[in-house]
Image 1: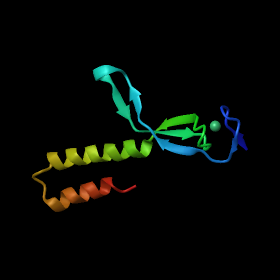
Image 2 (image 1 turned 45 degrees about the vertical axis):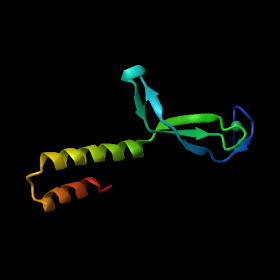
Image 3 (image 1 turned 90 degrees about the horizontal axis):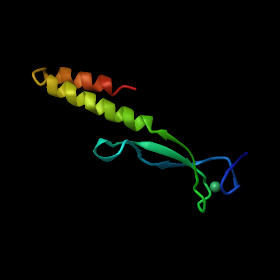
Image 4 (image 1 turned 30 degrees about the vertical axis):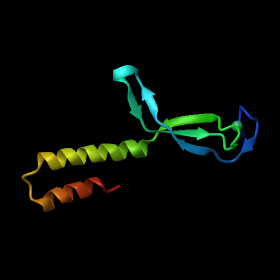
Length: 91
Ligand SMILES: [Zn+2]
């Protein structure tokens, strides 16, 4: 069983905490959606790991692509534009 390096409490699962990550500084900074893997001991909650939340990033990318497709194809019949958007939403 894993053991927290901070509080020494053994655990078999971690707590997931949604947490943005910042890249850069000042006006050049950019936020990314992230997930922290934390110690489940509520009195500790040490961050044991971190990663970018790829599901959120992918969903935002699909939304951006959808907006471009819809705006650049305003003259397409709605049925065709809807079909393209639906195909982008397929897993
Ligand atoms: Zn801990």
